[in-house]
Image 1 (spheres, helix red, strand yellow):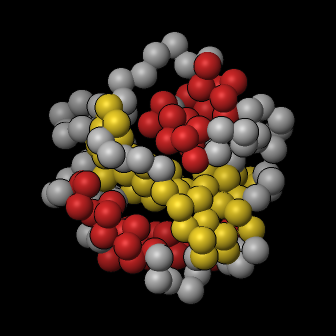
Image 2: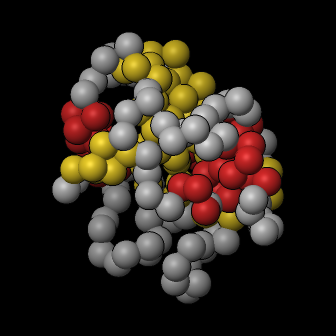
Image 3: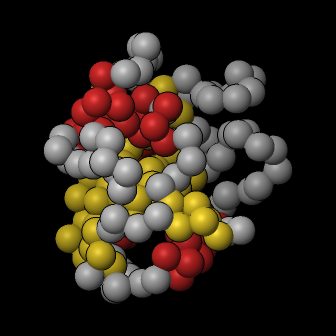
Length: 159
């Protein structure tokens, strides 16, 4: 089993409800085990500002899936929750990003792990640090040090 970290985000419909429904569902899928989730956080949208605020979280789980199979599983979940990919960084019913897969570094046309940009996003680092304060990236940088290096953040903890 490999430990994986997945970023969750939503800003269309009822985002808090969507993430709670997703988390409930993930407790019962064979693809993931020992699913744990951070608190939920509200954040301003990254990219176009003509959209609602996001609700974000990070989950940790165990999986036997290979990285690309896990990506396919996550994209299938996004589709089931009504995700439409019409605009980069646009509003969405559900966004699932594979942040870390064990200690793997992967550069594939469909998937890069660790997730590019995660080290600059407070809506990833804050909930990730909540779940795993001692976690290090494959290159040795700690989540705590990355979080300390952020100039500021606008997250509001929901629960």
